[in-house]
Image (cartoon, rainbow, N blue to C red):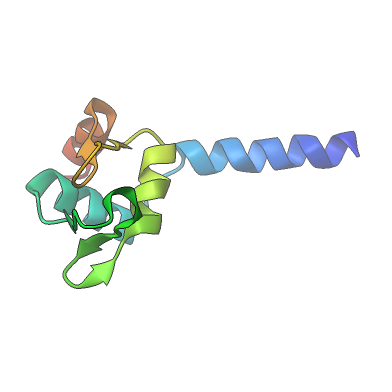
Length: 90
């Protein structure tokens, strides 16, 4: 049982510090450029939208990894860590 928990932690940490997928990089660039929108009607329940498709799960994943921070209203903001990641991929 202890070995299974150790393996799970290793996978979890690896997921947090690993490379970003192509979709995650695309959404991170779109957030930086202001192309991700979010409606104001339902507040936090509104999805993050990029080019007509919901990218809320991707934005949430980027937030868990520290690349974006959620704003009270509107789209998430790219953090310093996110900017550094984008600078390294350009």
